[in-house]
Image (tube, rainbow, N blue to C red; front, side, top):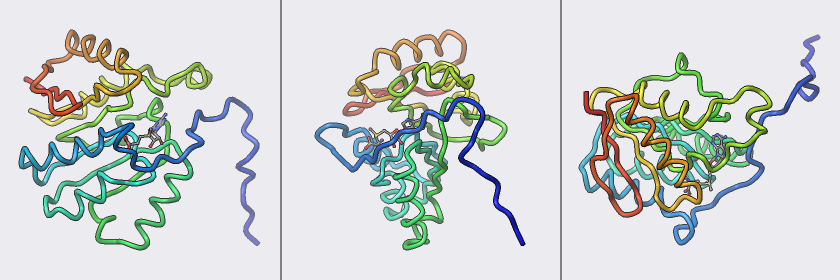
Length: 200
Ligand SMILES: C[S@@+](CC[C@H](N)C(=O)[O-])C[C@H]1O[C@@H](n2cnc3c(N)ncnc32)[C@H](O)[C@@H]1O
């Protein structure tokens, strides 16, 4: 007889997960729509993309899978409900799942040993969800997350931030700090996005 471990009784702090489900609300938060438009406008193809905060709508993964660009997206969500919606999406539409993968986790626990290299990383929600609950289990800081993402970038790779974020002050501060410790510079602004490019 096989026994399942009791997964409900951890001894320490619980993961700071996001107990919510975000549908596409372009009035409130157009970053994913702007990002897909930017990819199309710039003719970006065959790129590997890290996407922080998939939403339950999975707009970035679905659009890139269906627009013929052959861009591949690795998304992270901290919402069990959104992860469930990805599982359903992957089962129902394997043609989308071919280029779109999602993992459940806290971005403040990113481990670079487990990440491939990327052409593009979206950090639209930098600073939005980092609290003392992440400290309780030794979570990374926002600047550490941005630094890890930079270090995963291929030469010429890009990090995008979102000026409409309610924590944009954090993203702005940390991207300025990142520019002091890594070779990266603002390349352009596009709709409500800022595009930073690796310069070495
Ligand atoms: C407000 S929703 C925005 C989703 C999508 N980018 C959009 O603009 O429509 C925030 C997203 O960040 C994710 N998120 C929140 N905290 C996170 C964390 N600690 N690590 C990874 N993702 C997180 C949520 O799961 C959710 O997908």
